[in-house]
Image 1 (cartoon, helix red, strand yellow):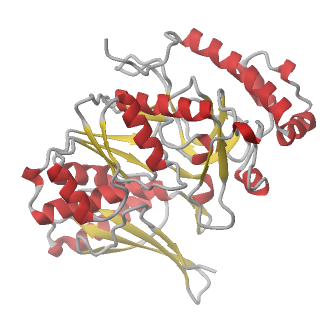
Image 2 (cartoon, one colour; image 1 turned 90 degrees about the horizontal axis):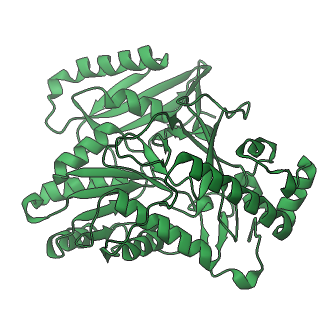
Image 3 (cartoon, rainbow, N blue to C red; image 1 turned 45 degrees about the vertical axis):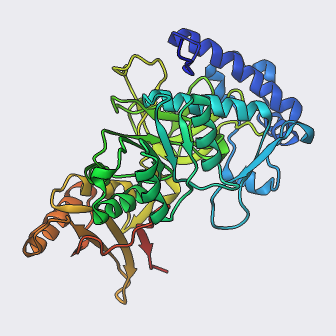
Length: 429
C-alpha cells in the first residue's frame, strides 16, 4: 500500500476538535516553558485553563516580528536548550535576522507535512526533483530535500543559480519536477529557449516558492518549458519554513495544513476578523510546535480565505495566493496601493511580458509621480507601444485610481533574478 501523508482527521468536526485540543496544549506549553509568553499571557489576563474553544483565540495576545528581533538570538524559546537540534534564520536584509529553534519533533512534523505537499501535487516515487533553492541557514533547501526524500522521490540538491549546471542536470538526469522561485523559473525558461533545449528535457511540473508570481509570468514559464502543471508553496521561517500548504491540481486556492496551525484573517488596522473571502492579514498560531511556538503571530502577509469546498475533496481549508504585505503598501497621492494590485492589472493585458518595475519619484513641484516600465511580449510589435502604454495607463487609472506614466521596453530589458526580483523603486524622500 502506498504511504500517505494526508491528515488523519476525516471531517471538519474532527479537525476542529483536534485544533482545540492542540491549542490548549500550546498555550499550556508556552505558559510553562517561555518567560516571554508567560509575561504576555499574564498581562492579557489569560491562563491555560481559560482556553475552551477556538473562539478563545481572540483573548490571546499578538506576537510580532519585533518580538523575535528583541528576543535575539533565541526568541520565543519554550523548551530547554538540550532539546534544540537545529536553528534556522530568516532571509531578512536589515538588522539582526530572525532566528528560530527546532526540536527533533518540530523537524519530523515539518518533514511530514512537506511530504504531504508533494503528494498533493500528485508526484510519484518515479519523479526526479531538482531543488534550485537556497541551502545553508535558510529554511528552503534542507526542508524541500527532506520532504522529497520522505515522500520517496529522487532529490537533486542543485541549489540556486548556475544556469549551466541547472541546464545540464535537466538534460542528463531527466528531471521531471523543478523547485525554484518564479523569478528563477523565468530565467531558466528563457535559458532553455535560448539554447534550444526544450525537446531535450522532460520537465513536467514546477513548484514555486518565496515570492508572488503573476498569471502572466506563470503562463510565460509554462510555455517556455512545456510544463503540464505549476504549484504555489507558501512558507516562512517563523512558521517552520516552506511547506505549510500547497494548491492542489484544481488550483482553487492553497490548502493549508490546519492540523498544524490555525489561520486567522484580520483587518490590519482594527485587528478584527474580516468576512470570509475578503482580504486581510494572515495571523497564525501553531498547534504542535515545541521549540518556538507562535501565538497569534502577525505575518504581515495579505490574503483571503476561500469559501466552499475544493473539487479535490480535501477538508483542509484554503487561502488565496499571497497578495502582498501590509507593510509593503505604497502611499501614492493619498491612495493606498499594494504592488500585487498592479501585478494583477498587468496580468489581464495581452501583448506584454511578465516583468515590470514601479518607480516612484518626488519632483520639484512637491508632487509624487509614478512611472511603470513594462516589457513588451517577446513577439510583440514595437509599433503598438504607444497604444499598449495608453491601455495599461487606462487600466491602472480605472482599477487603482492613480495615474502612471507607462514606458514599454524590449522583452528581456528588465533584470532577471535567480532569487526574488525587485519591482518597486521608491526614490521619494
